[in-house]
Structure formats: structure tokens, C-alpha cells
Length: 232
Image 1 (cartoon, rainbow, N blue to C red):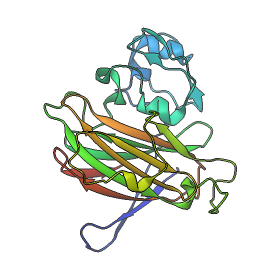
Image 2 (cartoon, rainbow, N blue to C red):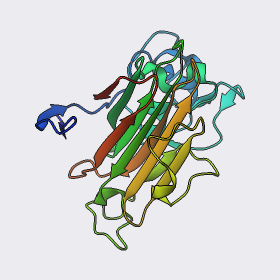
Image 3 (cartoon, one colour):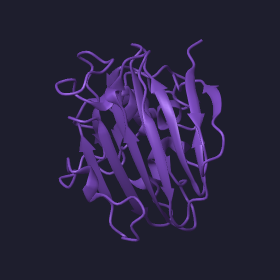
Image 4 (tube, helix red, strand yellow):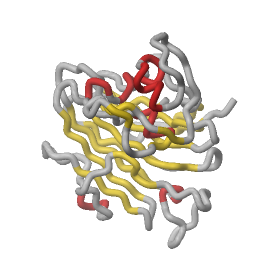
């Protein structure tokens, strides 16, 4: 079995180390396990019964806003995150109340993705949180060597016109009600800040990463509505 090594410290406390398993299948709460339209878009049949399927390397998801398969082909990490339309159907119930959660997704081809989900679908209140991510495997390899070779990671979601390469422009502990997303592929850094409303969790997908050997560091600034961080 594949495992992911995790180590962390809190407010200068001693480092704790553990291993977690990557997500390699759609959870039974995911539209790809439950929804006939989503299954059809992914070529998984159209059954209404809950079924587990391995994360594909790519595919098209059901867009709940347009009522059709997504126009774009998504990666396995994006399909797990399921940015397919309205928030009520997004995030596939991966989120947890008052929690910023990070999971590693690994598709059927052995490629990995980092998936972040803040808050839970249906929460009565919103929240605010900032996450800083850094590591040579986020770099494009031109100015900083990485382990990825031709597998170049990027910020796959969100894809907004406001994503900047100036990481310093996104203060993680800002009280602003506006989101701020920065990704610097030259130096291998990202700064992501979310502010979301009730029942409207937010998150991100970064990758692809090689199936083994990749390493990133992460730092959280917890704002209102978020009390905990969960890995795995």
C-alpha cells in the first residue's frame, strides 16, 4: 500500500510524524459514486446505486449548473474535488465543519494531487483561512530543481483571472472578505486565502506531483470559523 509521510508542529511544539493513505477511490459520498449523470460523464455507467471507482487520470464531470458534462477535461485531483457547479454538490462531502482539510489524491496512473477543502457543505456559518505552501516540487524546474521532471505542478483550482504570481500580495491573516490566490511556479510557492459564506465551502487543487518522492511544506493561518487542521 502507498503511504504519505506527514510531520507537523504547533506553536513551536515538538514535531509529530505520521503516515496517511492517499485517496485513490471516489468516496461513497461523492457524486461519481452516487449520481447517474456524473457516472455517465466519466464513462462509469449510469447506475443509481452507490459504487466505488478508482480515481481516473482524467475525465469530464457533471456540471450541476449547466445540466451537462463539463466542457473541460479534468485531472483526477480535480474530479475528486468536484468543482462541478453549485456549492451544494461540490467538494463531495470531503469537507468537515470548522476544519481546513488537506488530502493527497492519487489517480489510477500513479500521479498525485494535493486537495484542500475548507469548511463543510451545509455549515451554518462561513469562515476565513489562509494557507502557505512551498517546496521544490511546486517549482517548474527552470530556476529550482525538483523531483517531478516533466510533471510540472500548478494551481489547478481555483482558476480565476485574479490568480497572481506575487505570493506576497496575499496576506494569510488578512481580515478581508475577499479571496486571494497566488502561485509562483518559478520559486515553488503558493499563498491562498479564502473567505466564504455559510453553506459555501471553498478549497483548492494543486498538482500533478510524481507518485513518489514529492515533498511540500504547509503553514496555516486560522481565521474565524476554522478551529482545526486535518491531514488525510
